[in-house]
Length: 164
Image 1: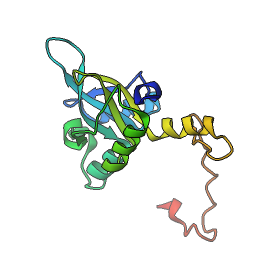
Image 2 (image 1 turned 45 degrees about the horizontal axis):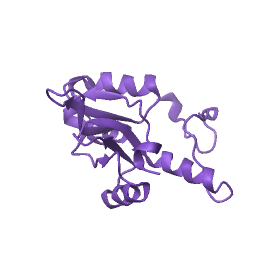
Image 3 (image 1 turned 135 degrees about the vertical axis):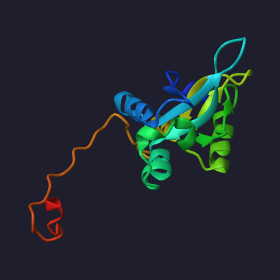
Image 4 (image 1 turned 30 degrees about the vertical axis):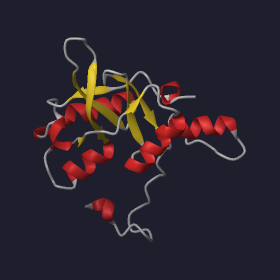
């Protein structure tokens, strides 16, 4: 088993010059928490990953700094120089590289450095769960949780904040 066997091959990508609001819309529409930021790979074609943009990047690099997301481009918020993994890399080595880099997602690249897929920790957990279902339970990305109903104003714990 290698990293490419487990990775998601239909990767959602974005260019670094795109507006952040457009990237956030893409994340919502495609139900993903991460976009791979790509540049053209040159004469041979394909796309080379140059960064990752996660929902966390948007929160910490834009909203927490009180920037207007309509005035920010992907290049200003993305994580640069992503940890990449070659398509031939064993799953064990891929996990070790991701652990050493403290990342949950890593672009899978071919021998030319072109994007071939995206490996996520959730893919690895799901694979392990299939091999040992009584030991590991995956967190399924297709499950959506409904938010609990809002508490009425002036109820304990609410402090009337919904009237602001």
